[in-house]
Image 1 (tube, rainbow, N blue to C red):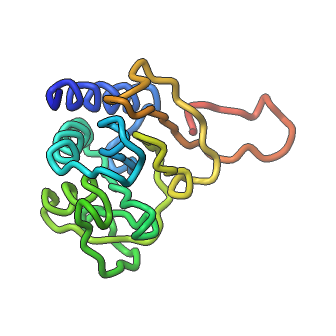
Image 2 (image 1 turned 120 degrees about the vertical axis):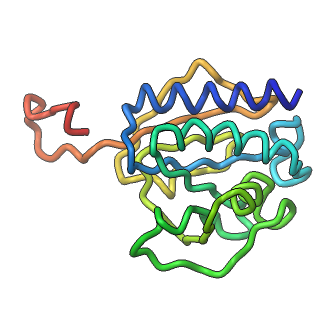
Length: 181
């Protein structure tokens, strides 16, 4: 089961990178409920092994492309984000260390695996992957656009993805240039 979960997470991350046209230096926020993956109510049954499997799969895909991962903690830590210090440059950090039952198994896996993990209260990410209804929208740039993935579930958890684009100002649709988004 763990291998299937990791493979689905890898496929979702790959497809998001491709469809969102993500570039090196950009940031993807990922929220992941291991409880939902295993068919339980969000926050009720954190699973460290599954958290690590999903983290390793997604982080591997993003790292290969030079894309930063911001791992969202659970609501008990106000959806704080765990990110590498170098990706947090210039942002104010907060003092928290997630654990599987206090922050979430996925965020705890990120904290353990990152070279220099730090926590941020907020970020404006370029894209996001929500595994299990974790509500990542608060950490996306202002204009989010749904990205339809072939991977609709990881385990029992629904998967929703988004990319962001620049705001369109005014009514001139002709000024819309997707290459600038």
